[in-house]
Length: 113
Length: 115
Image 1: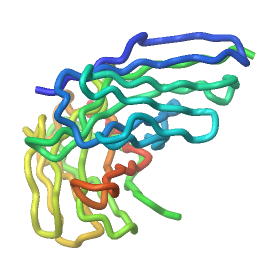
Image 2: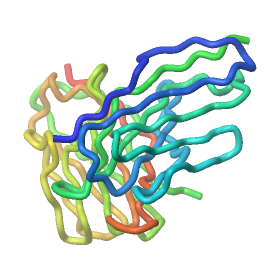
Image 3: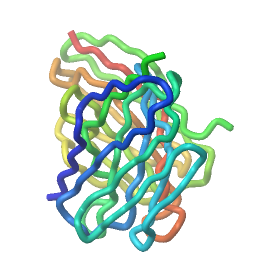
């Protein structure tokens, strides 16, 4: 069974700091990995999608990397802002079995003004 | 830009009552999913559909039923609600299983409380 782990569970940083969120998964047979943002009481907003053949994806201040062989992904946020405060979830879509995403439990990020 | 729309957004049920959650997507996606999100457990797949008229069980299907009579709609039913079904329910859709168009899009969620 695919297990996805995100460490740390919570993170507080001062505004302007660069930060890295970590995601690890146990089964490297994946189609892709997706990073989401979830604001309190809200749905999930897709941030970045990395295909299994890719090493990284960038969108604005966000950069996600994927090392499939080691089962790891990182989400790098540059020059953090208070508006970045949210819970960040990573999810992997595996190659076999039920067609679904396996989610981590998320990292709750607080950016302090 | 409607995307994925869930109805209702909030609901309180008494134990034993039934209800249906509606998910509608306007992106012509083949695949649709129902997840539940519980504190400390992440999102878990309840049921999914790979196309109109098809459904399949996910990780936690017990106590739920689904139907996909139209491509754009995916319904989640609770026949006899239990307090253990108190959760936030999310619907998602994606274009296809493989290839580049596999990004999943989520609705805003339905917060269900069973008392």
